[in-house]
Structures are given as C-alpha cells and as structure tokens.
Amino acid sequence: MTLLDFTHDPALTSWVESANEPDGDFPIQNLPYGRFRRAGTEDPLRVGVAIGDQVLDMRLAAELCPWGDGIEDLLQPLAAGDLAGFMNLGPQAWRAVRGALSLALAAGSDQGPFLETCLLPRTQAQMQLPCTVGDYTDFYTSLHHALAVGRLFRPDNPLLPNYKWVPIGYHGRSSSIVASGSPVQRPRGQLKAYDASPPVLAPSRRLDFELELGALIGGSNALGEPVPIESAEDRLFGLVLLNDWSARDIQPWEYQPLGPFLSKNFATSLSPWVVTLDALTPFRRPFTRPAGDPLPLPYLDSPANRAQGVFDIALEVWLQTAAMRLAKKPPQRLMHSSSADAYWTLAQLVAHHTVGGCNLRTGDLLGTGTLSGPGPGEGGSLLELTEGGRKPIVLADGEQRLFLEDGDTVILRGFCQRPGARRIGFGPCHGTVLPARETVTPA
Ligand code: CA
Image 1 (cartoon, rainbow, N blue to C red):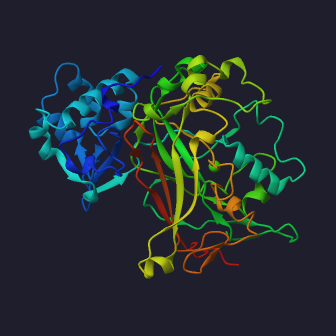
Image 2 (cartoon, helix red, strand yellow):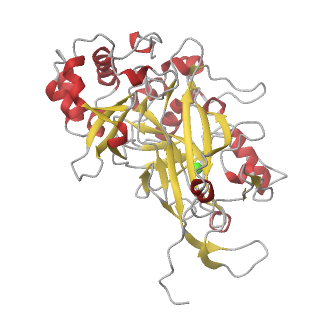
Image 3 (tube, rainbow, N blue to C red):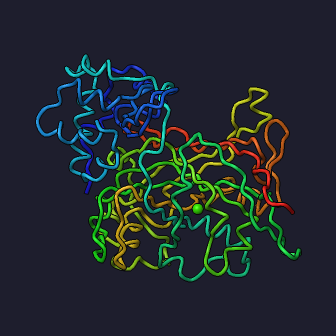
C-alpha cells in the first residue's frame, strides 16, 4: 500500500521559483517524467523531469550532480534517455528516485548549484511520446459513458448485463499513438447512413474526441502468471491524458460483431508527461459500489483497493476552432468530469487483463475509456454532448459544432486538488484536425 511521505508535504517548495506558483501543473510534489529533444535539433531523445516552467535534463543531472549511494545506478536508464528502462525497474526504484529528486530540487538543497545548469525552459523542449508504446488496450470503465452511448444505440436496453461484472475492453493499435501536438488527419472510411445503401468510401463527417486517462505499465508478468490485485499497482508506472479520436460514422457500420476497428485506429494522442502513481497518492479515494450493485468477484477485490483504489483527477476538454485562433480568442471549455466516477479502478484493470494468463509488458498502455460524469455537460465525447449529433453546441463566438471541423484544436486537461495537498497537473494533451487526404484512387 502506498503511503504519503515527505515528497507530498504541501509546504515543500523548490529553488526553481516557477515551481512555487500555486496554480502550476508541475510543483515539486509532482515530478513527472517525459522524453524530449531540444527544439529545432535532431539530438537523441533525453529523459526530463518537469519542474515549474523548466525541464530537468536527466542526462546532465546524472553527470553533473552528486546523488549518493544507491541512486546513481537507478539514474542510468534516465541518463541514457531510456524511460522504459527506468519503468522496468519497479516501484522501489521509482520511489527512491522520486525521494532523491525531491531532496535535490527542494529550496535550500546542496545539490541546487549543480542542477541549475541542467535545466531547459519547457518552451525549448520538443516533447515526444514518453516511451515506445507496446500493446494498447482500451477499456470502458465509465458507467456514465456506457449508459449515455447505450441509450443512443439501444434505448430499450442501454446497459448490457455483463457491464457490472467484467471490465469491458478491447485490444487496440499502438502504431498510430502520437504525442500531444501532432496533427490528426481526418480519416476516410466506409460510411453508411442507416437509411442509405450501399456504403461509400469518404472522409468521416462525424469526427469526435474521447477524454481518457492512459496508464503506462512498468515491469512484466510472465505469460501464464496472472497479476493478483494485491500487487497490481506495482505494475503501474504512471498516468497520461489520452484522446482516443473516433469516427462516429465509420464506427456503427463496422463494429458488429467484433468491435471498433478503423473508427479508432487512425490516431490516439497522449500527453507527454507521465504523472507517477506516487505523485497521485494524496488524491486517492475509497472504491465503493452504488447500493444494490453486485460486488466485484474476489479476484477484482482487495482491502487496499476498497480503501484507496480510486484516483480523483479533475478532467476537462477545451476547444479552439480555426476562427477562434484567427481572432486570437482563447480555447473554450466544453465539459468537465472526474476520474473518480469510473466504475472500475486501475488495479482492477490490471488484475482482470492478466487473470487468464496474458502478460503485460513494460511500455504497454491501458486506456480507461471515455471518462464521462453523471451530469449534463459532463460527457467525455461530442457524441454525448450533442446527444448523438442532434443538438449542436453553440460556442461563445456563435459557431456551432455537432462534430469536429478541420482546423479545430482539441485540448484535454487534467489536475488534482484537495484541501491539505498541493495541486498537481498533467499539462495539456492537444491535437489539431487536418483535412482528409486527397483520394489517390480513381473513382
Ligand atoms: Ca475509447
């Protein structure tokens, strides 16, 4: 069970002044990891730690700063630009390095003078994916999302009977996972309206976002050896924001009987900074089920999961259209929700994924599924916010949206705050929609 320690002390401040601003995403209590290269160069990727408006370059930090016994070895993968190598070391190493970084970056630290030269302004860091993503699984953990989508497609029977027993998921595709900031090209696919026949190959007209969290796996279990829920969190290095871009007009025609395919495989965006589970410790909550709902089967239940298996992360989606950008108007918030409203915890996802013997490996990604809240304006996709593309969203400048237009920028944001803890954030996950490619096939 993870406990609070000195790294979570809300009174802790850093000698990096910008880290002490109260509304910043990256105070000394956060210390997320990412991979970057200096903007405008083709240098090899380095691992960095975000602190205020700076990035601590871990290659330089390992070389130029004294770290003390036991820590220098653990820093080697970070110094080599290999975040996956560090993720593979496991929770004791993660916690030891977090403690060392906290001491080194704290106000008054003897290591400060060594590390001052290891900082790069975040504006000069070109962020990449935190690691090469191995296998990607997307779950469906929000009951509110499942109900809202179910009502659109099956008004008489919105929730299928397995939902409250088994964490629903499918195996996705990792080759098209991109870092925040990468543009997203509108996909072509087979479209078929309910009353039209036959289908046509055309650019999607119902392009959507899905607000999700992504969990990155650190360490591997052997094929055939399930991870029990008691140690499931030891396999979770940290979380990122995830936008599972979706084509709502490709999806209904292709998804039966085997599930989503081309409607989901053209792009998935990840935020670049991995917020570790240790950083999220102050924002844990008990896992409960509404009265009358079935209790999870024993392999999905544990005292620790019940006591503190939920992470309470505030989530938001913002939109900036091309016209807003041209007029220098800021993005507009479309919705907000909380990850605490999900029906399944991260530990349950790991335990379930492996219970049949499937091996998870370092760098695998588990998506939570769209994290919608229970109320109006809390849908994690346009499909929900526009009631299936029937009720347009009217933006402040008078524009309307049912689905995304070319030039639209979608921005996901996530942060944690509660009394007695320092606020931490994820940094944005954004992507701009590009027009579909000109077709190359003669009609
Ligand atoms: Ca999804």
